[in-house]
Length: 347
Image (spheres, one colour):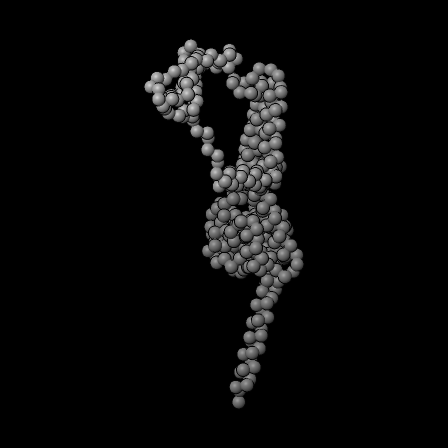
């Protein structure tokens, strides 16, 4: 049997003679391979050990993968492929865009920003655009939260409220509580605010006639507010008028044309509010005292202004007919029933 021995340092390979059981000596001869077969680094290979009468032990070849392992690997590859197929369309487009951007960025010549691949030629415009966007976003947020913008939104909501109530009165059916609750949900105002805003709008923009007074009384009844809440509403209206235009001044000598008109408007508004505070269908009479104190008007001057407003609003009889027509009809019907009962019991 032949075996290959380890290479000697002199690049000579020794081969033992065929085994002879009757001989105790082992002879060997050396064979020097040609230069092309000598490894460049003979010590890099693992030396093979061979002892007398033993076989040469060669490294075992790598074991082949079992069928189960190959099947598992195939399943893993299939799963990976399925996951790649399940990617959404937007994500695929985003990945394509990132790859395209990276390729374009690398193709742009010029110095780079630090150790990154982003060129300065592209970094400067991007930085300018980013700063411009942040500044524009800040200005937009500041504009929408500014007092002027908030006041504009409030004015628009007030206009929607007053216009909706005018449309309800124009239909001729009056205002009901359900309609007011719908306006409350639409505008976000409370019932007191709805009544206050429409009264202030009506006193400033509409002629003070019996029709307007009857509409205000109808609105007050539909709001289902008690006398205390209505009196507080009139007080708030008076307080705001005094804050905006000042108190009532009877002697207007020395005022300019603009100041004269302003004080006349204050007198007219006071007369209207004082007239409403004196109406028992609208509010309790105790609130009229608070209104006079807020405007700084004496009893004599208040009576003069009230009489002037009463002439504009019309006589009380016509107003009572417009407002309390249904009440008078119900009272007359009850009176007729009482007379019928008395006549039936009479002997």
